[in-house]
Length: 382
Ligand SMILES: Cc1ncc(COP(=O)(O)O)c(C=O)c1O
Image (cartoon, rainbow, N blue to C red):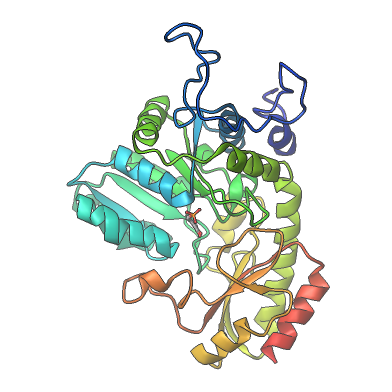
């Protein structure tokens, strides 16, 4: 790749040179567990066993590293497998981390129900409030700051550059879950973050047909250590999953443009709707993180959340009344999805500092015709 190549070009070509053997224009699915050695230790291209490395996965990893502007990327079986491997590499039992006051429920569950038992303690901090973060950093040694921006499901915005600066001054590291934005809209490593994680299940894959995760890093030493953990613990994606993700990435830019355009119109319609109490979308000038989002993102993403005037039961009923928005967990696919975070994706944060409002509805706005989507929401809200 030429270093001047634009994002769209990198997405289609990075790690995806035509196959040297056959000229195949997309990387083949190397559906294989082991590789013949030319004499003991005589590996062809460094491949011996697909848990350690697989050529289809290598293509995906080279592409992800290029898209995030990282030195190395590692693909995982899921977003949570990626998070777990990174955290258990970067931290040790006895360490303390800062986590956001809004985040994917499964991420919170990993910190609160798995890693806490391993010896990793955490403090919940609103990452959009820099003074609160600095206060925590001054109060005790912190091994790592974990943030999402925009957050799931309340679309809070954290200032990545300012957090990275605070992390550096405190001698700690900043990890950004970039799932909601995707590297097309936001590149945290360029803003000073030390590592980026993804649920590639979402916008990167883009078609609701594969589960996957990734860690992208600027530091080769950290990358080597996370690769060791992944090989030692085994949370790798299969070759077909890597191939599906890579195929999705080719159209990331065009999909994201449409997601963002549709989501903006949906947010604007909801903001005017009498049944709606509050809309969460960083593209609205009324959003408290709008200015920061404008500075660090290319556009505002495809996720929109809103609260209903009529309360929880009305929210649950609305989720079941849409025709085009499919009621389901997950996000980031070409098809629109609707869900009730309190009872679905975020059930695991009930009773915690991350609990979400009971009357909240989350939309993953797809790339269908926007007028059709608006009509569907209006009839469901009637
Ligand atoms: C922001 C965010 N991070 C991480 C994950 C976990 O990813 P996965 O479901 O691929 O394990 C999700 C899943 O919904 C998510 O929304």
